[in-house]
Amino acid sequence: MFTGIIVDVGIVTSVRSAPYGARLSVRTSRDLSVRKSDSVSVNGVCLTATAVDGALLHFDCVRETLRRSTLRNATPGDRVNLEPALRVGDPLGGHFVLGHVDATGLVAGVAAGLEDRTVRVKAPQDFMRFIVEKGSVALDGISLTVADVGEDWFSVKVVPYTWEATNLASRSPGDEVNLEADILGKYVFRLMQEGRSPAGLTLESLREAGFA
Image (cartoon, rainbow, N blue to C red; front, side, top):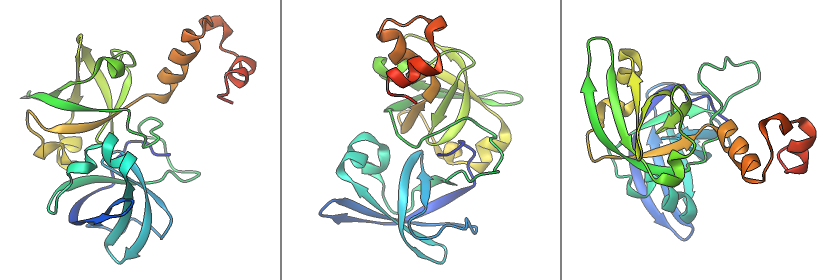
């Protein structure tokens, strides 16, 4: 589990084909205290470190991961957002992020303002049902707040620090990004589909639905 607070922006050094999919190698610019078998969010995708060689982290990406995320297009030199898994006692500065990509979207526009930048993302309808104004969304693993919502798009406001401390600064219209909706919204949507009212969202009902 992660929080969507990016710790480092790594550089992809190699992408090698493998029987299971691909092996991705990423060089970090700071010590992330990652060991072999630790989970790391790479552009919002939860991956397991299969080997650690100093500042070089190696990950195995199975075909399902490549199919569902932008990692299928990763090439050497790409900048990727990195966040080690949340540890007990760590501050939760963003929101609960699982690292399970729900969909990919396209950057539709980037507008610079006096105090922030507005990034508009076009997303699939199946994903948009989980997006609400002022709700949370993970964009390439970054925890952001939804500023505005349209029929097939949403926008987020990005403060200067986040813009400079992530790979958002290298994004432009047409670029594909990984999207993950707020996990709480997905659970509520599932329960509502089963005909449960908001008043029926008790611990017992969650257990009956298989969520607790």
